[in-house]
Image (cartoon, rainbow, N blue to C red; front, top):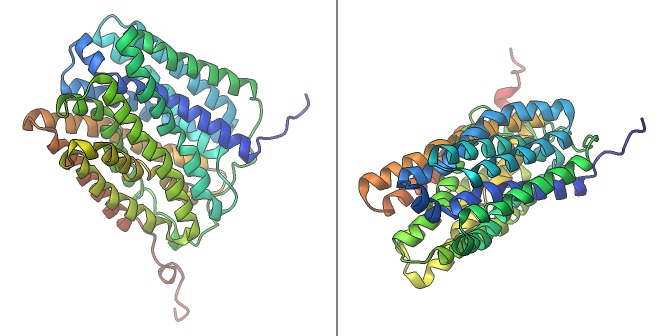
Length: 396
């Protein structure tokens, strides 16, 4: 059998953006139509938060095995499999007669979403540290890009045709993307290289300590995704379609913020961890804007929240890839995604409980801001030991 050429980096990035956008379209799509689903299935605020939590619980279970499978079999087959599982989960969601079946479909979609992420970290991993932050961030921009489509399209479709018919759109998107990548399969990526050894050991993130950053930041990010539509309807008096547009603005900030922060971190790769701390601190400030600004400035606040509180992901993935051993980028990033997804499971439930207990949405945003601040502290604690401490003394 003739051997096909491996993916070039550009094609790998393009396929990764497509896959993550399709996955984000499906996963964020359920939360984008949360007010309609809440009314139809009789969900509480905690139940609304559980939509995202159940999805990311499924993703948590498959992220690490998918990373290992990526390093063993190559990214294409793993990526196509994840997208087709996502499509199957959305099909269950769209036809669910009751809340239990609905959450079962969300869980299956989450399993697929967990499979999708690790192979994209291999496909889009360049050979030079001076490009890694930007390339990984462009790739990760696929997630909020899919969320923008979900926020702009699905609530409007749901208002006219019902949320079940609206779910057919992300279902078809995931299925078609999976089939396209399967057709481009039976190849391995030439970019599955070694993020490690490009920076001195003391400049890399220390693992597993650094995985905690993904836990708190993803928890805050997914909580923002999960609750913004309901908050805008319940506290700000917007319609379902207007709240969907608000989510689209938030995610537009994320689409712009990810490559911006990635490019900024590539200017000085040795300071990438410092950049993560800055993004976290600014994210904490941005989240507070959601409940303090007047209605006229709410669109600006949503853009700023997306820019900061959603813009961290690509720089973090680059830092994790640089901490990986050669040939283990899939495995290492899969392990980091396990903690990312655990945060995405736990934090929306926590914030939903806090909001229900306090009776006011502002307390939910306070918790999100605190999670961002915790991320800055975790980065400080996860820096590797200085070079002088790593080298044996000449006097001994």
